Image (cartoon, rainbow, N blue to C red; front, side):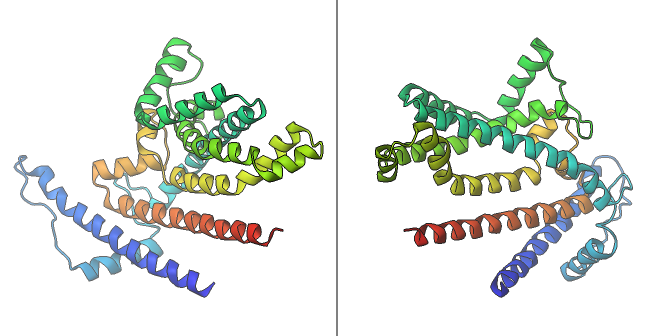
Length: 296
């Protein structure tokens, strides 16, 4: 526990240094926005890095992250967008996991090599296709042609608005998870343990739906946790395409508009969040590995 705390503090120090430097470096770029406008009286006061770093922490701890260019509290801004991003992340994870587990286990249950090869090909095809192309295709089919779902926006708690961006993000989760599950479920279906269960007249549906599922679940859960961390940090491209008011769109806005207070705070938020979920996945992996080693 002590080593984990020190590891986090070291990471936090490094992350804060990077965030502070990026925001300070980004501030200097503002001078060039007015290079051809005839404006020469710009507030380009230079401060030392140590002073900037202290001010950075002071802003995070004492001033709610500072203010955005619109005069809004940075913490308030992130908090107002977190639920939308969380809602989108949950939908994407559920969509990807349900289809990945469902099709992978179904291919084993039916003993269908055609279904196995189809899901394997589809997963590779999705991963080789940029996510913005998937998003645009979804808009063309489900909004423009069928008029089933809105082209973007968000209403708090309304899943109707997150279906298209959720499928765009969830399709990649489905693809990555399927590429792990397909060979693993096939290997488990041919294991000595499965053969033993068959000789003892266990139903094939029970073996596939319970025994094989539980065997592949731990690593799949770790992969989902890592994906969840990435989604909570924001998905800039998809959120921008669907003008979705999430953390990713705020990060894109902060970079585009040179909103340094918002940018540096979002970097800290994303880094800390991803670190925590990454370490959670690491400890779960160690826990499950220990369980398997203790198993007879």
